[in-house]
Length: 386
Ligand code: CAA
Image (tube, rainbow, N blue to C red; front, side, top):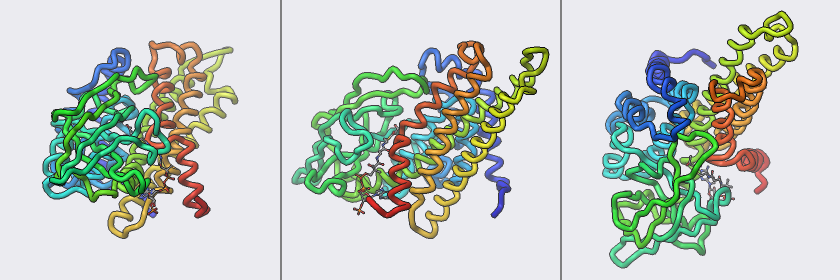
């Protein structure tokens, strides 16, 4: 076991840290307050290879490994979680599935534009009446005689939906087959039959745009099917395994920012004639925050390492990804909560970023599979009982 990072991994971490500190952190409060989509910063991240970190260079990416992805995501999330949500969806949910299941033409068309940061991608699985129970989707794609599909249905909570050029979308092609009757499609948002619905007013990650989308007699050509008909659920679940490593990294980044702010504050702030860091009740909080933060980072790196092993040796990394996401998201929520408490009134004030970390941390326990779903995945895989 080697706890050292390679030169390449340190290099991408450095690039991400520089952009995060110079461009993202100074505008984080503005983006949180206004909800404005940070297009300029996303372009900068794309130009520096951070929108396709694991994408091979022949498709416009950086050709780096999953550990590099974790390191970059942590830096971006520590500066602003909303930016890291956009980075994560493009890298994990959009590019991963196309790289694994797409044709050469699909990789050139869809992956390149997103990896270079010229366009934004999205992932549409959730529907108004189906979130955790993803196979209960109603969006329907009916195959025509010429091999094309007519797609009708609504999808909700689509991260980057308001700005996405392309969307990986899942629809039922054979409802009688349940999970095996779902197919993945590449949707071009400029084509007729694609509509955007209401934008979600969110508690946190406010600069990451989220909306409903609707397809009305949208025609998908055979070239726009990702993988084979009926393979959609497997693609969605595999992509979410990778996505969960991204969200775990995001949670680590938010937790680190909240922890570091607390560490400085307990050394500066005085009460009863002493630094508050000298009080045992504060020391206990700092120690517990540090333990949870380190455990989260290490489990997230382990999941990334396992993903890399699986890429060459086969198998799955579902359990490792779920363990990392569950541990890191609950740690981020707890650490952000403690950070607000340590800062007292200032933690509750919008003059400091603690309340933003607290609001942003919450989503990591919800999207890309709630904490309850992560527990279900882990327990099913451990016990073999379904
Ligand atoms: N990789 C590959 N295949 C998988 C898989 C995985 N990780 N997980 C399941 N499958 C396969 C199974 O092997 C099974 O196939 P076989 O019958 O051939 O074995 C098939 O898929 C069906 O699996 P299940 O019976 O386990 O399916 P289920 O209906 O019980 O659901 C679930 C399982 C874990 C609950 C799943 O529905 C799930 O993960 N739900 C949560 C959905 C989710 O994470 N949504 C997030 C939305 S996206 C989002 O938030 C993005 C954003 O905008 C940021």
